[in-house]
Structures are given as C-alpha cells and as structure tokens.
Image (cartoon, rainbow, N blue to C red):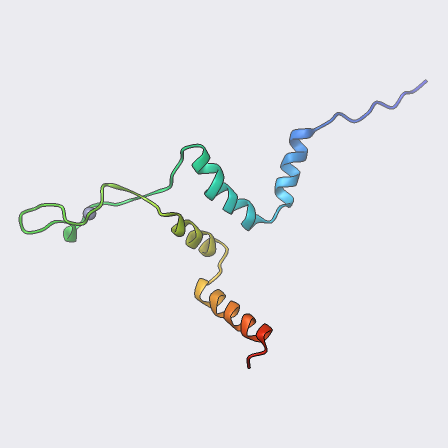
Length: 105
Ligand SMILES: [Zn+2]
C-alpha cells in the first residue's frame, strides 16, 4: 500500500517567491524608506575634506563632518538612477500627460 506523503509546507520560501514577484521599484523604495530607518540605519555619504574645505587660517568651512547623512530625497534620486530613469524627462512626460487629459493641446 502506497500513501502519498503531502508536500512539506515552505512558508519562508513562499515569502521569498512573493518578494521576487513584487515590483522591484516598490520593494526597493520600501526597503530604503521604511525598513532601513526602522532598524535605525541611515545612509550616509563619506565626505573627504579637500582644498576648498578650509579657509586661510586652516579652519574648516565646508560645514560637513566626515560622514554626511543622506537626505531622504537623495534616496529617490538614487532609485531613479538605478532604474535608468531620467527624472526631468519623467516630470516632462507627466506634465504632457496631464495636459493631454485636460484636453490642452
Ligand atoms: Zn570638507
């Protein structure tokens, strides 16, 4: 007598599969904007002081520490760049679409 054994439940694999199926931009945006800050993680840009950072008395005048926190707006710019989307063209397209919907031109 042969009994067919049920397939094992794979809930973590299901979550991983669902994550792969999601829209990548949405997923990355949530990761950067919600998940990382919820873990206390902030992205920062490393600023190395150069010639223009000091005045004649060798005082720092650039106004930055060595590591500079990245403002949230910059994360969006990085996402656009990562996906190869030109933001100015995108905004122009949006304006064009709005004009089209309103029946202008
Ligand atoms: Zn500097």
